[in-house]
Length: 152
Image (spheres, rainbow, N blue to C red):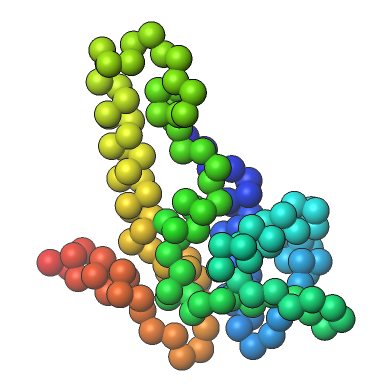
C-alpha cells in the first residue's frame, strides 16, 4: 500500500503551518520550503480547507492557518479525508469483478490490516509529528495514553 502524494503533501503542509501559528502561511512559501509545485499545493489546500483542517484568508496578505490546535488534528482522520480509495485489492473496491469473491479469506485479512493501519494513525495528532512543538502546547491525549501503555 502506498499513500497518494496528495496525502503526503497535506501532512507536510499541516506540519509547516503548525510550526508558524503566529502568522498566515502562503502556498508559495510552503512550495518553496518543501520543493512541491504550487499547483499541487493549491489542490491540497482546497481539499484541507473543504474538510475543515485549515482556514484560508484570500487577498493581499492572505494565507492559511490551522482551523484547530495541532493536538486536535488526528493524523488518521486527515489520511482518511485525503485518500480517495483504500481498496488494497479489487475485492475491497466498489467494482468488484473477482471470481474468488465469497470463496477467499484474503479480503478479510487485508481489510483487517487496513483497519489496524488507520487505527494506528488515529493514535497520533499533528502535534505528535512536530519535532519542536509550538510554545505552550501540551501533549495530546493520544500521546499521553500511548506513553502510559509503553511504560506499563
